[in-house]
Each structure stands twice: as C-alpha cells, then as structure tokens.
Image (tube, rainbow over all chains, first blue to last red; front, side, top):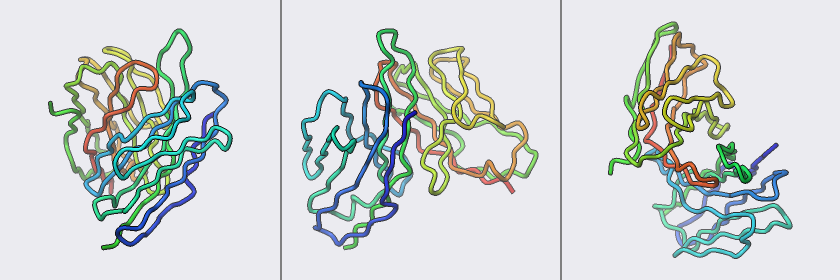
Length: 119
Length: 113
C-alpha cells in the first residue's frame, strides 16, 4: 500500500521568507517515483519535479529546491525568497515501478498544502 | 499545443440528471485519467485508461462510467447525478512509461442540487 502525508494543511508566510513544505511517504516498492505539483488559484495542476528512488541528490531550480531523504521517507520542497505568485496548493505524489512488464502503476496524491504568501 | 482541455468548465445539475464531461489531449498520450478533488481529500482517481478502447476502475468509480473510443478523448459520464458527486473534476494524461508525470486539464466544477 502506498501513502503520502502532507501534514501541513495551510501555511502563511510573508513575502521574501523561505518556506518548506513537508512530504512523507510510505511504500513497499524498492523502486518508486516522487512528484510535486502546483495548483495555483486558477485551478490547473502543474508538474514541478519528479525523482526516482535511486537518485537522492538534491535538486535546485531557481528559487525552488527539493530534499529527498530515503532514510526518513521524505521529499520536502523549499521555496526561497517566496513571492506572491507562489501562493498555491502544492501536492506531493508517489507511484511505484511496474517491473519489467511495465504497465500502469497507481499514483497516490497527498492531501495538499495550501501556501499563502502575504505581500 | 492545447495540452489537455476539458468541457464544460462549470455545470449545475439536479439530482437524477445525467451529463458527460469531455476530455481531450493533443500530446498523443496513451494514458488518461479522471480525478475528483474534494476539500481536504486531495485527488482521488475515478477511472483511467491505458489506451484506446480500454478503461479501468480507480479508487472511487461508483456512479461514473467512462469511454475511450479515440486515443485523444476520454469521456466521463454521470448517469444519475447525486449531491455527493458535487466536486471539481480533473482530467489528466501521461506517457505510458513508468514514472511519467501527468498533465492536467483546467478542471470542471460540478454542482448537484
């Protein structure tokens, strides 16, 4: 069984503050993929990043960075110097690997963290 | 490219009415999905399709039917709407390779009174 926990329901920060969104996952698969998606007020979910279970290197993209730690089953997302445009709901998601035969694998989404950046 | 489009964007139904939500993608993706999003519950998979002519049940399929007659289209039907089906519905698509990210449509806000 897969599970994704985003314990932070809502976070408010003042513009230019750094903020970290937590994601903790559970899976029995040894190979799996983790994702972050952003859902701005307009409603459409946008893909941000994917990590596979073999790659624990941290990723940085502009003001965004991701910290993947298998030892704690966490895939946290940090926004540096937050901006009002970062206000959105952020979802963490997990999927397993289908093995050599491939095929559809269930994607489990967390319940999301609503981030409000106050100007 | 339009990506993933959904029609309609908003709809109000009365209990017992039926409707069909249309999803279209122009990325030649094999996989397509229908989700519903409710407050505090994240995204829950209703049905999905791994290719033209194939569909399968997700986590919450009751009360919904789907069809994938063409690769680019995925239809979600409600035969007899209930207030519990008031939700925001998202369609998504992805490549068929394991671990592919999903591309989402703009959503359909459905209210059943």
